[in-house]
Length: 108
Image 1 (tube, one colour):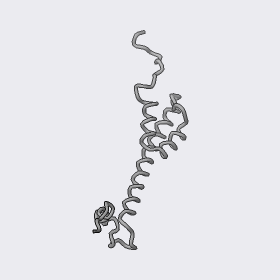
Image 2 (cartoon, helix red, strand yellow; image 1 turned 120 degrees about the vertical axis):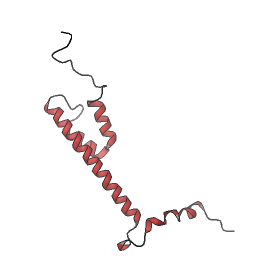
Image 3 (tube, one colour; image 1 turned 120 degrees about the horizontal axis):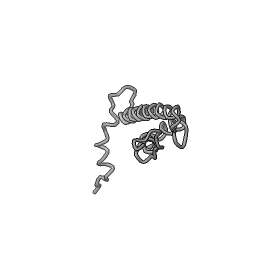
């Protein structure tokens, strides 16, 4: 008796990935993969622009950025994405960063 394996039963589920109606025999999986990559690139690029603008602003105000210059933070964000943005925010904008005392204190 020939019983189907797990993978044989899964082929029916993933048959939509090879939609024969697409021009040139392009599989649906390839199209989904390309769209996912493009969306990821746009997200990384948008965050990198935001980090670059913020890091450059901090550099011009002599407040940072910490550990690296604006270009390095931008490149790291392009490569690393959202986790790098979180690290950047924690280092530069969270309450974990010690603030230098201001010139005018309300206690003076």
